[in-house]
Image 1 (cartoon, helix red, strand yellow):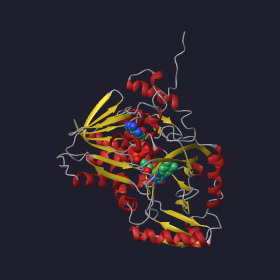
Image 2 (cartoon, rainbow, N blue to C red):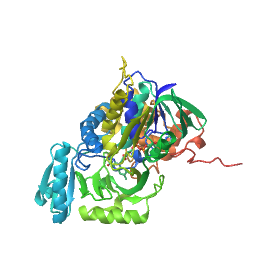
Image 3 (spheres, protein in one colour):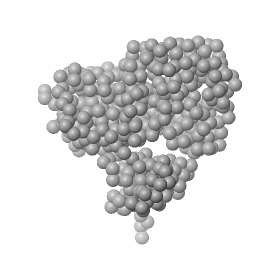
Length: 471
Ligand SMILES: Cc1cc2nc3c(=O)[nH]c(=O)nc-3n(C[C@H](O)[C@H](O)[C@H](O)COP(=O)(O)OP(=O)(O)OC[C@H]3O[C@@H](n4cnc5c(N)ncnc54)[C@H](O)[C@@H]3O)c2cc1C
């Protein structure tokens, strides 16, 4: 029997697993997909928000602000791409300028550090390409950009190194509560655990209803994006937001940690798994973005995608413990930015409900990852001499070597798909979107995993790429 079963391995489940892996607990993470970060965690704006947006005295405000420093520290320790570039919220009218004042006061009350209201001139000094129509802006120096899937992977990998088990391709379909334990059904598996943590994203209401009376509903809401080529990557230096409205934080224009420009999202009601990026969504996003930064060159678009927000009938995050069952539900934006604080809060809930958490004598909290293109010439030379696979560039757009791909395959959570490799070391993330390196990645995966090439999927289970010709 497990002490803890966490359902879902997005950023919420992975952060909790990492946090709990310090303790002498037998923990399992149950994930319905074949890899980490397959839900909202892989399709979002990738911003560590400063914390002025959530209403005062909410869990969201508290955990967002608390997480700003925690996330920075974690990314450093776990070798996750992170850059504290700061954010600007632009106002285009007197009415919006009043909203900026409101956000400023709210931010101060929430404990956000370094907030300032900038005049139009000061804003243009920071961001020369923003529209001349800007009236003023809110500057938040603590906002950062991050690689969300690498963040979740790093946390989950380190949890595994510390003894956590992860069951992939295991969709929880039923949970029974007895006097001593929970009995979880996931496909053919029956998993017994003393505590269950519901971190199931857009399915969190359904998981809750398996155990407790109906209390809340998830209201999925989709947002679409453009990823522009690296030649547009310096169009802005900060995360450039518009004034938030009832639908969310509005369309942003921002550099990414991988050197591209991200533009989006809109906000439309959707199905739980509808990640299509429709033309109407993209046209809306483009129109809004041009209002902030008129010179964005959309002809350099290399990818469009959508993510589904696990919004809920509650305005705040739903994090509470009921007789050994802990909901961590409705983790909408800023869920990525708040994940470290959410995990800390869950740990406190567990302590408060009498679960004994004793620290392990040996615990690994750090993780290293080689990124060839970030090394100096001397370091590259040494690496290639020690392992010639680092001398063979497979992804030319992102300069990812065979050594890095092989390293990714032999990490504690084994990727079995082409996109699994992309998420771990960036092969296929660039301008050609895997057009050149995709077939080589299939070959390397097949060789290293000792499986036929036909068995290598692009992304989710059964998204096969190759088919053997019948003779
Ligand atoms: C368009 C958009 C933009 C956003 N921008 C930002 C941002 O810039 N900054 C920020 O802080 N936040 C942002 N967010 C919010 C952030 O992405 C989410 O808060 C966060 O990713 C939620 O993580 P999660 O782990 O709770 O959910 P998910 O990442 O969705 O993970 C849930 C996991 O549970 C699994 N699962 C579901 N059902 C079952 C089941 N029955 N059995 C087993 N496993 C199951 C899923 O497969 C999934 O892997 C944005 C979200 C969207 C959609």
